[in-house]
Length: 354
Image (cartoon, rainbow, N blue to C red; front, side):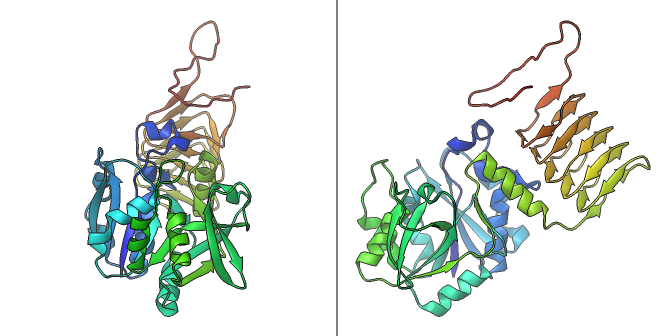
């Protein structure tokens, strides 16, 4: 069995963070999202993986490499322009050959990995095996209609969903999926929809199995999803302190302090992770916070936030909460008179002030 991981697209809903990086490389608990997908596939015993990447960028290749660190072999397939998930599948036909495969959206996260879905697919003998998750907003996803324990239709982003389930971003197929993706036509938004490929399989008598994800699953397509995924991952970490914590500091709960980090006269309440080379001085780091490598936080408070590498948060008089800061961001106290808010903000940013 092989694996296909999608890492293309432009991540428009996560701008401005994605103006300068692929969304699949945004860190959750200080680790790129796509690494979780690779780990899940590797834990299921799959060794040959193809990752679909944007043709005009090599950042995923540079961040992931050849797969040796996970004990897998990774190949890269170039996508000239985004054209829908069914197009991503079509790109992988030669790589897959006659092998069944798992298709994993690289910006999705699921607790417990994918091993049980791989095993259930193998036992089922189905042509297509879908994972489903109950969601509050099914209209954002592909939605199955289920009658008498069978999926009888799948509709992409319906205005009137026929169930409260979303088809999650983990799919398992045999070779019949390539017939389907070749047969369908672009949707009204100009993309080859994977839901249309699933409907083609249903209409042509192929067997469709499914399992419900009973734990948590996240499609990290929006900033709130990133923060929630970060919370869920941090909630399951194991504490380890490999940096320096002085005697005036308090580190409570599940906290990872990576090598070279220094915590001085501060309070850190887990679950949280403090990246390598960070300086936390006279500061408070609250639960569900990920602090990227070499970031400095002085005389400031941060909680339920994702702070990327090389940031500076100095002398900020109000707690930062529910925030995402990109690399090399500075939030510092204004110097001199008059005392003002002074911003340099890129396109599609959002700032709330009090």
